Image (cartoon, rainbow, N blue to C red; front, top):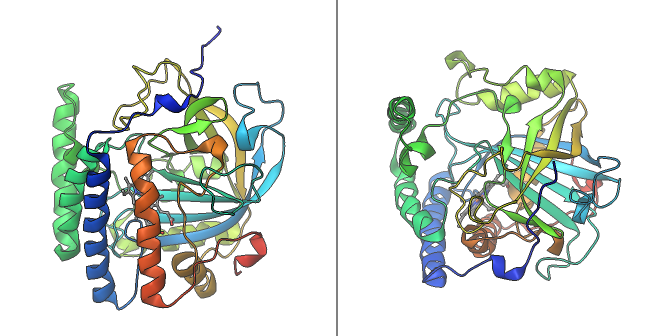
Length: 363
Ligand code: HEM
Protein backbone atom coordinates (compact mmCIF):
# COMPACT_ATOMS: atom_id res chain seq x y z
CA UNK A 1 0.00 0.00 0.00
CA UNK A 2 1.49 3.41 -0.88
CA UNK A 3 0.83 6.17 1.66
CA UNK A 4 1.01 9.87 0.88
CA UNK A 5 2.87 11.52 3.71
CA UNK A 6 2.15 15.24 4.11
CA UNK A 7 5.22 17.33 3.15
CA UNK A 8 6.37 19.90 5.73
CA UNK A 9 5.65 23.52 4.76
CA UNK A 10 5.87 26.53 7.12
CA UNK A 11 2.23 27.43 6.39
CA UNK A 12 1.02 24.18 7.95
CA UNK A 13 1.23 26.27 11.14
CA UNK A 14 -1.40 28.95 11.64
CA UNK A 15 -1.26 31.57 14.40
CA UNK A 16 -4.03 31.16 16.99
CA UNK A 17 -6.24 34.25 17.61
CA UNK A 18 -4.77 36.29 20.47
CA UNK A 19 -1.95 33.74 20.79
CA UNK A 20 0.67 36.08 22.19
CA UNK A 21 -1.57 37.39 24.98
CA UNK A 22 -2.83 33.89 25.91
CA UNK A 23 0.75 32.62 26.06
CA UNK A 24 1.73 35.55 28.26
CA UNK A 25 -1.15 34.73 30.64
CA UNK A 26 -0.18 31.05 30.82
CA UNK A 27 3.48 31.79 31.45
CA UNK A 28 2.63 34.39 34.09
CA UNK A 29 0.22 32.02 35.90
CA UNK A 30 2.87 29.27 35.83
CA UNK A 31 5.43 31.62 37.32
CA UNK A 32 3.11 32.43 40.24
CA UNK A 33 2.54 28.74 40.95
CA UNK A 34 6.28 28.11 40.61
CA UNK A 35 7.12 30.87 43.11
CA UNK A 36 4.62 29.45 45.64
CA UNK A 37 6.12 25.96 45.35
CA UNK A 38 9.68 27.29 45.70
CA UNK A 39 8.68 29.21 48.85
CA UNK A 40 7.13 26.02 50.28
CA UNK A 41 10.27 23.90 49.69
CA UNK A 42 12.88 26.71 50.00
CA UNK A 43 14.15 25.29 46.71
CA UNK A 44 13.31 26.05 43.08
CA UNK A 45 11.64 23.16 41.24
CA UNK A 46 10.47 22.71 37.65
CA UNK A 47 7.15 24.38 37.01
CA UNK A 48 5.93 21.07 35.58
CA UNK A 49 7.36 17.58 36.02
CA UNK A 50 9.08 18.69 39.24
CA UNK A 51 9.51 15.21 40.73
CA UNK A 52 12.07 12.92 39.13
CA UNK A 53 12.16 9.16 39.66
CA UNK A 54 15.37 8.21 37.92
CA UNK A 55 17.97 9.61 35.55
CA UNK A 56 19.56 7.23 33.09
CA UNK A 57 22.46 7.24 30.71
CA UNK A 58 21.93 5.32 27.53
CA UNK A 59 22.13 5.40 23.78
CA UNK A 60 19.90 6.03 20.82
CA UNK A 61 20.68 3.79 17.85
CA UNK A 62 19.12 4.90 14.56
CA UNK A 63 17.75 1.78 12.87
CA UNK A 64 19.56 0.58 9.74
CA UNK A 65 18.01 0.81 6.26
CA UNK A 66 15.15 3.14 7.14
CA UNK A 67 12.98 3.98 4.11
CA UNK A 68 13.20 7.56 2.77
CA UNK A 69 10.16 8.84 4.69
CA UNK A 70 11.71 7.73 8.01
CA UNK A 71 15.38 8.48 7.23
CA UNK A 72 14.95 12.18 8.03
CA UNK A 73 16.70 14.71 10.30
CA UNK A 74 18.45 12.99 13.22
CA UNK A 75 17.38 9.66 11.74
CA UNK A 76 18.83 10.24 8.25
CA UNK A 77 21.88 8.05 8.88
CA UNK A 78 22.50 4.87 10.83
CA UNK A 79 24.32 6.33 13.85
CA UNK A 80 24.45 6.00 17.62
CA UNK A 81 24.09 8.96 19.99
CA UNK A 82 24.49 9.19 23.77
CA UNK A 83 21.30 10.13 25.65
CA UNK A 84 20.19 11.21 29.10
CA UNK A 85 16.69 10.14 30.19
CA UNK A 86 14.83 11.86 33.05
CA UNK A 87 11.72 10.06 34.35
CA UNK A 88 9.23 12.35 36.07
CA UNK A 89 5.67 13.06 37.21
CA UNK A 90 3.63 15.93 35.73
CA UNK A 91 2.79 18.33 38.61
CA UNK A 92 5.07 21.24 39.44
CA UNK A 93 5.33 20.04 43.05
CA UNK A 94 6.61 16.96 44.87
CA UNK A 95 3.49 14.78 45.15
CA UNK A 96 3.05 11.27 46.51
CA UNK A 97 3.48 8.65 43.77
CA UNK A 98 0.13 7.27 44.95
CA UNK A 99 -1.53 10.23 43.18
CA UNK A 100 -2.35 8.96 39.69
CA UNK A 101 -1.11 11.63 37.32
CA UNK A 102 0.77 11.63 34.05
CA UNK A 103 4.39 10.54 33.94
CA UNK A 104 7.18 12.02 31.83
CA UNK A 105 9.99 10.46 29.79
CA UNK A 106 12.36 13.23 28.69
CA UNK A 107 15.14 12.18 26.32
CA UNK A 108 18.13 14.42 25.68
CA UNK A 109 20.16 13.30 22.66
CA UNK A 110 23.71 14.69 22.77
CA UNK A 111 25.78 15.64 19.72
CA UNK A 112 22.93 16.02 17.21
CA UNK A 113 24.40 17.57 14.04
CA UNK A 114 22.65 20.18 11.87
CA UNK A 115 20.93 23.60 11.78
CA UNK A 116 18.97 24.54 14.91
CA UNK A 117 15.26 25.40 15.28
CA UNK A 118 16.37 28.41 17.35
CA UNK A 119 19.83 29.90 17.45
CA UNK A 120 20.92 28.42 20.81
CA UNK A 121 24.37 27.12 19.90
CA UNK A 122 23.59 23.71 21.49
CA UNK A 123 23.95 20.24 19.97
CA UNK A 124 21.15 18.57 21.91
CA UNK A 125 17.86 17.25 20.59
CA UNK A 126 15.28 16.84 23.35
CA UNK A 127 12.14 14.71 23.01
CA UNK A 128 9.71 15.38 25.87
CA UNK A 129 7.19 12.56 26.08
CA UNK A 130 4.24 11.81 28.38
CA UNK A 131 2.29 8.55 28.90
CA UNK A 132 -0.82 9.77 27.08
CA UNK A 133 -1.19 10.23 23.30
CA UNK A 134 -2.99 13.57 23.27
CA UNK A 135 -3.04 16.82 25.19
CA UNK A 136 -6.73 17.19 26.14
CA UNK A 137 -6.36 20.98 26.24
CA UNK A 138 -4.97 21.00 22.72
CA UNK A 139 -4.55 24.66 21.79
CA UNK A 140 -3.31 27.68 23.68
CA UNK A 141 -6.83 28.98 24.57
CA UNK A 142 -7.86 25.60 26.02
CA UNK A 143 -4.50 25.26 27.76
CA UNK A 144 -5.03 28.65 29.42
CA UNK A 145 -8.20 27.16 31.00
CA UNK A 146 -6.24 24.12 32.28
CA UNK A 147 -3.72 26.48 33.79
CA UNK A 148 -6.53 27.82 35.99
CA UNK A 149 -7.06 24.29 37.40
CA UNK A 150 -3.35 23.64 37.85
CA UNK A 151 -2.77 26.93 39.61
CA UNK A 152 -5.02 25.74 42.44
CA UNK A 153 -2.99 22.57 42.94
CA UNK A 154 -0.12 23.88 45.12
CA UNK A 155 -2.69 24.50 47.90
CA UNK A 156 -4.35 21.08 47.57
CA UNK A 157 -3.38 17.99 49.56
CA UNK A 158 -2.26 14.70 47.98
CA UNK A 159 -5.51 13.16 49.32
CA UNK A 160 -7.65 15.76 47.51
CA UNK A 161 -5.81 15.05 44.25
CA UNK A 162 -6.13 11.29 44.80
CA UNK A 163 -9.91 11.70 45.29
CA UNK A 164 -10.17 13.88 42.15
CA UNK A 165 -8.27 11.19 40.22
CA UNK A 166 -10.62 8.46 41.50
CA UNK A 167 -13.73 10.49 40.59
CA UNK A 168 -12.31 11.25 37.12
CA UNK A 169 -11.50 7.57 36.45
CA UNK A 170 -15.04 6.58 37.46
CA UNK A 171 -16.52 9.27 35.19
CA UNK A 172 -14.20 8.20 32.36
CA UNK A 173 -15.37 4.56 32.63
CA UNK A 174 -19.04 5.60 32.45
CA UNK A 175 -18.46 7.93 29.47
CA UNK A 176 -16.28 5.39 27.63
CA UNK A 177 -18.95 2.69 28.11
CA UNK A 178 -21.48 5.08 26.57
CA UNK A 179 -19.01 5.90 23.73
CA UNK A 180 -19.11 9.53 24.77
CA UNK A 181 -16.02 11.77 24.47
CA UNK A 182 -14.26 12.63 27.72
CA UNK A 183 -14.30 16.29 28.77
CA UNK A 184 -10.67 17.54 28.87
CA UNK A 185 -10.64 17.93 32.67
CA UNK A 186 -11.72 14.29 33.13
CA UNK A 187 -9.15 13.02 30.61
CA UNK A 188 -6.36 14.95 32.36
CA UNK A 189 -7.18 13.63 35.83
CA UNK A 190 -8.06 10.05 34.87
CA UNK A 191 -4.53 8.63 34.49
CA UNK A 192 -4.08 5.05 35.74
CA UNK A 193 -1.33 4.55 38.32
CA UNK A 194 1.00 2.02 36.71
CA UNK A 195 4.68 1.10 36.86
CA UNK A 196 6.41 3.88 34.93
CA UNK A 197 8.80 1.57 33.05
CA UNK A 198 5.98 -0.32 31.29
CA UNK A 199 4.29 2.79 29.89
CA UNK A 200 4.26 4.12 26.30
CA UNK A 201 5.15 7.81 26.03
CA UNK A 202 4.08 10.38 23.42
CA UNK A 203 5.04 13.84 22.20
CA UNK A 204 1.27 14.61 22.15
CA UNK A 205 1.91 17.48 19.72
CA UNK A 206 3.56 17.43 16.30
CA UNK A 207 7.12 18.15 15.22
CA UNK A 208 8.70 18.63 11.85
CA UNK A 209 10.16 15.35 10.66
CA UNK A 210 12.63 16.53 8.03
CA UNK A 211 10.58 16.74 4.81
CA UNK A 212 7.49 15.50 6.69
CA UNK A 213 5.55 16.03 9.95
CA UNK A 214 5.24 13.53 12.82
CA UNK A 215 4.33 12.75 16.39
CA UNK A 216 7.04 10.87 18.28
CA UNK A 217 6.54 8.07 20.80
CA UNK A 218 8.60 5.58 22.83
CA UNK A 219 7.30 2.11 23.71
CA UNK A 220 8.75 -0.76 25.80
CA UNK A 221 10.73 -3.15 23.57
CA UNK A 222 12.68 -5.58 25.76
CA UNK A 223 10.51 -8.26 27.37
CA UNK A 224 11.40 -7.16 30.92
CA UNK A 225 9.86 -3.67 30.48
CA UNK A 226 7.00 -5.01 28.34
CA UNK A 227 6.12 -7.26 31.29
CA UNK A 228 5.58 -4.14 33.44
CA UNK A 229 2.85 -2.68 31.19
CA UNK A 230 -0.35 -2.16 33.18
CA UNK A 231 1.26 -3.30 36.46
CA UNK A 232 -0.36 -1.23 39.22
CA UNK A 233 1.66 0.65 41.81
CA UNK A 234 0.92 -0.91 45.20
CA UNK A 235 -0.16 1.22 48.18
CA UNK A 236 2.54 -0.43 50.28
CA UNK A 237 5.18 0.92 47.85
CA UNK A 238 4.62 4.32 49.51
CA UNK A 239 5.10 7.94 48.47
CA UNK A 240 8.30 7.41 46.50
CA UNK A 241 7.25 4.12 44.93
CA UNK A 242 8.50 5.04 41.47
CA UNK A 243 12.01 5.99 42.54
CA UNK A 244 12.35 2.62 44.29
CA UNK A 245 10.85 0.63 41.40
CA UNK A 246 13.19 2.32 38.89
CA UNK A 247 16.25 1.87 41.14
CA UNK A 248 15.41 -1.81 41.83
CA UNK A 249 14.96 -2.48 38.10
CA UNK A 250 18.09 -0.77 36.79
CA UNK A 251 20.17 -2.00 39.74
CA UNK A 252 20.15 -5.38 37.99
CA UNK A 253 18.76 -5.12 34.47
CA UNK A 254 19.15 -3.42 31.07
CA UNK A 255 16.13 -2.16 29.16
CA UNK A 256 15.30 -1.25 25.59
CA UNK A 257 12.57 1.02 24.23
CA UNK A 258 11.58 1.61 20.64
CA UNK A 259 11.43 5.20 19.40
CA UNK A 260 8.73 5.63 16.75
CA UNK A 261 7.38 8.26 14.36
CA UNK A 262 3.74 8.55 13.35
CA UNK A 263 3.79 10.60 10.14
CA UNK A 264 0.94 12.92 9.22
CA UNK A 265 -0.97 11.71 6.16
CA UNK A 266 -4.01 14.01 6.31
CA UNK A 267 -3.95 17.52 7.78
CA UNK A 268 -7.72 17.51 8.41
CA UNK A 269 -7.88 14.21 10.29
CA UNK A 270 -4.42 14.59 11.87
CA UNK A 271 -4.39 18.29 12.80
CA UNK A 272 -1.19 20.12 13.69
CA UNK A 273 -2.79 23.05 15.50
CA UNK A 274 -4.99 20.90 17.78
CA UNK A 275 -3.02 18.49 19.98
CA UNK A 276 -6.24 17.12 21.54
CA UNK A 277 -7.08 15.08 18.41
CA UNK A 278 -5.75 11.53 18.37
CA UNK A 279 -4.02 10.80 15.07
CA UNK A 280 -5.70 7.57 13.89
CA UNK A 281 -3.30 4.64 13.59
CA UNK A 282 -5.42 3.26 10.70
CA UNK A 283 -4.32 6.33 8.69
CA UNK A 284 -0.70 6.15 9.78
CA UNK A 285 0.96 3.66 12.16
CA UNK A 286 3.72 4.42 14.66
CA UNK A 287 6.82 3.27 12.76
CA UNK A 288 10.09 2.31 14.52
CA UNK A 289 12.99 4.72 13.88
CA UNK A 290 15.51 4.03 16.65
CA UNK A 291 16.33 1.82 19.62
CA UNK A 292 16.79 3.48 23.01
CA UNK A 293 18.83 1.27 25.29
CA UNK A 294 19.80 1.72 28.92
CA UNK A 295 22.34 -0.54 30.64
CA UNK A 296 21.98 -1.58 34.30
CA UNK A 297 23.17 1.34 36.46
CA UNK A 298 22.51 3.32 39.62
CA UNK A 299 19.85 5.75 38.33
CA UNK A 300 19.45 8.07 41.27
CA UNK A 301 22.65 8.86 43.14
CA UNK A 302 22.51 12.23 44.96
CA UNK A 303 24.98 13.78 42.47
CA UNK A 304 23.00 12.54 39.50
CA UNK A 305 19.66 13.70 40.91
CA UNK A 306 21.10 17.14 41.70
CA UNK A 307 22.55 17.45 38.19
CA UNK A 308 19.32 16.39 36.44
CA UNK A 309 16.93 18.31 38.71
CA UNK A 310 18.94 21.46 39.38
CA UNK A 311 21.44 21.92 36.53
CA UNK A 312 19.78 20.46 33.42
CA UNK A 313 16.79 21.73 31.49
CA UNK A 314 14.82 19.71 29.00
CA UNK A 315 13.02 21.82 26.43
CA UNK A 316 11.24 20.85 23.18
CA UNK A 317 12.98 23.83 21.56
CA UNK A 318 16.40 22.28 22.19
CA UNK A 319 15.89 20.98 18.69
CA UNK A 320 17.23 20.66 15.21
CA UNK A 321 15.38 22.69 12.59
CA UNK A 322 14.59 19.27 11.09
CA UNK A 323 12.52 18.56 14.24
CA UNK A 324 11.04 22.04 14.84
CA UNK A 325 8.08 21.83 17.29
CA UNK A 326 4.77 22.70 15.54
CA UNK A 327 1.41 24.20 16.57
CA UNK A 328 0.24 26.78 19.14
CA UNK A 329 0.92 24.53 22.13
CA UNK A 330 4.48 23.99 20.97
CA UNK A 331 4.98 27.68 20.20
CA UNK A 332 3.81 28.58 23.75
CA UNK A 333 6.42 26.20 25.15
CA UNK A 334 9.15 28.29 23.54
CA UNK A 335 8.44 30.97 26.18
CA UNK A 336 7.31 28.74 29.07
CA UNK A 337 10.36 26.49 29.41
CA UNK A 338 13.09 29.18 29.64
CA UNK A 339 10.87 31.10 32.07
CA UNK A 340 10.58 28.11 34.40
CA UNK A 341 14.21 27.14 33.99
CA UNK A 342 15.49 30.70 34.62
CA UNK A 343 13.40 31.01 37.77
CA UNK A 344 14.59 27.63 39.09
CA UNK A 345 18.26 28.29 38.35
CA UNK A 346 18.10 31.86 39.70
CA UNK A 347 16.30 30.84 42.90
CA UNK A 348 18.83 28.07 43.60
CA UNK A 349 21.85 30.12 42.50
CA UNK A 350 22.92 27.38 40.07
CA UNK A 351 24.02 27.89 36.47
CA UNK A 352 22.15 26.03 33.77
CA UNK A 353 24.39 23.82 31.64
CA UNK A 354 23.54 22.11 28.41
CA UNK A 355 25.73 18.99 28.03
CA UNK A 356 27.99 18.37 25.06
CA UNK A 357 29.15 14.98 26.37
CA UNK A 358 27.64 12.18 28.41
CA UNK A 359 30.65 12.46 30.76
CA UNK A 360 28.93 15.51 32.26
CA UNK A 361 26.27 13.25 33.83
CA UNK A 362 27.58 12.17 37.26
CA UNK A 363 27.50 8.46 38.15
C1 HEM B 1 2.68 18.67 24.09
C2 HEM B 1 2.45 18.59 25.34
C3 HEM B 1 3.51 18.55 26.42
C4 HEM B 1 4.36 17.53 26.74
C5 HEM B 1 4.47 16.16 26.07
C6 HEM B 1 5.17 17.99 27.86
C7 HEM B 1 6.13 17.24 28.51
C8 HEM B 1 6.98 17.69 29.50
C9 HEM B 1 7.97 16.90 30.16
C10 HEM B 1 8.26 15.41 29.90
C11 HEM B 1 8.62 17.70 31.05
C12 HEM B 1 9.74 17.28 31.99
C13 HEM B 1 11.09 17.52 31.35
C14 HEM B 1 12.19 17.16 32.32
O1 HEM B 1 12.30 15.97 32.70
O2 HEM B 1 12.95 18.06 32.67
C15 HEM B 1 8.02 19.01 30.97
C16 HEM B 1 8.40 20.11 31.71
C17 HEM B 1 7.81 21.33 31.62
N1 HEM B 1 6.69 21.64 30.88
FE1 HEM B 1 5.79 20.48 29.50
N2 HEM B 1 4.82 19.28 28.17
C18 HEM B 1 3.80 19.65 27.32
C19 HEM B 1 3.16 20.86 27.27
C20 HEM B 1 3.53 21.95 28.02
C21 HEM B 1 2.94 23.25 27.89
C22 HEM B 1 1.82 23.63 26.91
C23 HEM B 1 3.57 24.06 28.79
C24 HEM B 1 3.35 25.51 29.05
C25 HEM B 1 2.96 26.39 28.19
C26 HEM B 1 4.57 23.25 29.48
C27 HEM B 1 5.44 23.69 30.43
C28 HEM B 1 6.43 22.97 31.04
C29 HEM B 1 7.42 23.55 31.94
C30 HEM B 1 7.48 24.98 32.38
C31 HEM B 1 8.29 22.50 32.30
C32 HEM B 1 9.51 22.61 33.23
C33 HEM B 1 10.71 23.19 32.48
C34 HEM B 1 11.96 23.42 33.36
O3 HEM B 1 11.87 24.09 34.39
O4 HEM B 1 13.04 22.94 32.99
N3 HEM B 1 4.52 21.99 28.98
N4 HEM B 1 7.02 18.97 30.01
